[in-house]
Length: 114
Image (cartoon, rainbow, N blue to C red):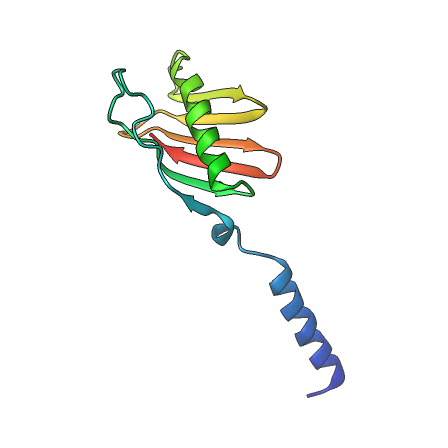
């Protein structure tokens, strides 16, 4: 192996280490159990919470509080709800059997299902 090919191989290995996979960066967090006790949504959990660049504690907080605000808004005819909560940009897809949400703030991302 020549010196230039060794350097090229080393550079490629360093680049692979420096670029983490986005899919592996998302952490799975515990669901929020029964966040709306005493309401018509009693017994429905906030599930499949995924966090990128956020702790699980923070992601569960964002999901619970941003979702509570979203429930108070009138659903649009398109079924896609956009709003902000505490500096987070939230998009909720209300179509289908389960609502799917994404909250972003800079490089932080939190996803959940209701």
